[in-house]
Image 1 (tube, rainbow, N blue to C red):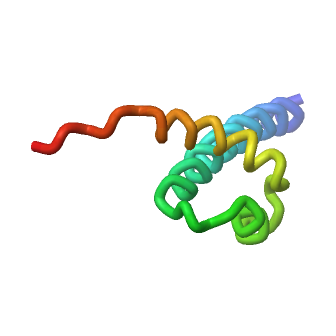
Image 2: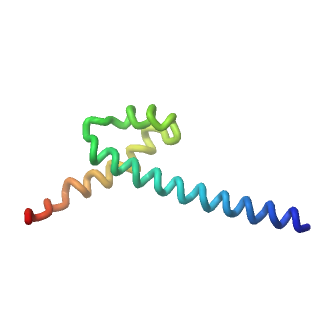
Length: 77
């Protein structure tokens, strides 16, 4: 029973870590697209070894890019 419970705990930790990594990948995809507008979705798909396909990358990044483009520029100091 102890070994079973240890495996359950390890699986939960792994699942939680996976979800954190996926959330960070999404944040980084948005950041990379903002910083490199010449980089196309197909380029990202290839670079990340199809972790996400083009459609998914677009669904993640396009709304954030629109929001970023619509936000007013920060005032110069």
